[in-house]
Length: 159
Length: 193
Image (cartoon, rainbow over all chains, first blue to last red; front, side, top):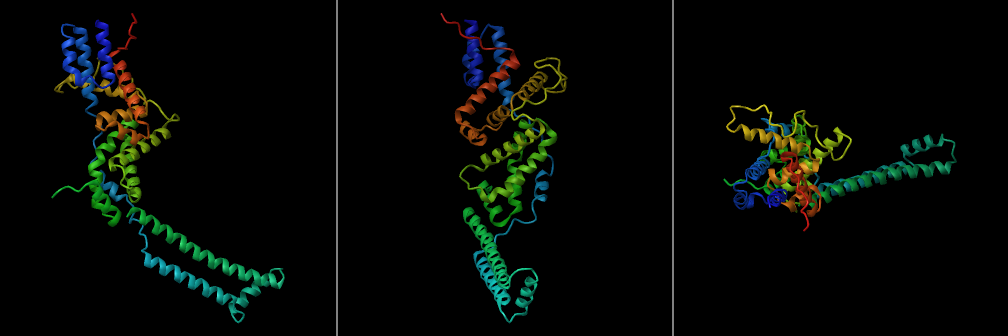
């Protein structure tokens, strides 16, 4: 009987029910000093667990955290600004490509003559000029579009 | 003036980068972060660094916090993850016990503050927390969240990324282990008639 009662008390502690049935167990262990001591110790352990041991938060902790934050949250451009940037980028890329491809352009001539020094056929150097300038233009526009797209997209998620 | 809710403060930080609002969030939750980090790490020296990293990570991630769960749940999860990462860096095992202090467990020969109003309670307190330090990190976290912070099982499951049943099992086993360490009592198998 005593062992059974001890087992019940221990299992009640394990399942977290000891405190809620304290009165019942106190009555059951009356005049059984060993079980009374066990019950008191287990209830004491419960009390300690409910009063967490934790280091004090140091003075000025919040201020230090604020002080270590980035200078400014990354500002996302608004839609109008992004559209303008993309259009401007396209215009610039197109202008650059037009200038470079123009036969009267000194720049085109300069670039072509530069490329002509490379031991390639004339047709190939012209094609290469076209490809290089087009690639630069496409990459520039793509970069503008991608960065602005993801900026707008993440902004929508937070709204 | 009524205190702003966590949701309102988060909105101010995300929309206007209101540092004062973020400072309020920190002040409101710093104790809980310190407590959980300390319980997992077991060392006071590292706790402030971890807590600072936690709040920095929270600041960076606030824009993507969708508000589906409570802010405190998310904060506890970040804290737990950071503390576990620090623990893994410190030692090679994922689930590990903390270094055991030299004094014998359950010993009554304690250096007790005789001016303490209840020296015996102080002794027990020391014994309990030393015993908790011997539990695995996840069990320590469950003990802290359930007993220390008063968080219910479903929320603990969410914080630790565990099934509900596993959380209950962890807590049960942790309490059982503590009980065995602190009382020397083991539950004997019931004798079948």
